[in-house]
Image 1 (spheres, rainbow, N blue to C red):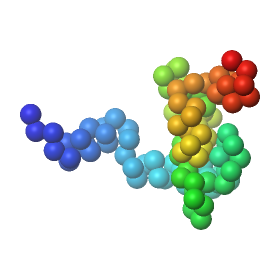
Image 2: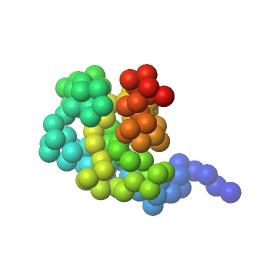
Image 3: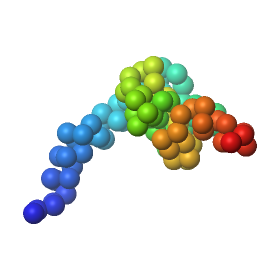
Image 4: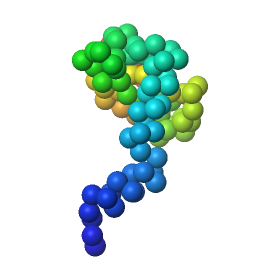
Length: 98
């Protein structure tokens, strides 16, 4: 089986992980709501040291939708920390309530 890079890239593109589309979505959300992490409030994206990522407030693993009502900008650090937890689960853990 040939697992060349183009084959992997094609599989990711089919799965909805195309970098150009993600980049456009980040720009769209940032331009609409501002370039701030929804979770820590730090500036993200262009002109900052924090990478802007798109996060699902309700994770897709918990039947969250991929739409504007469920997507926010988050710094890479917060997005990684939140993982596949809901916003409520994440905030309770951040506040030390578990």
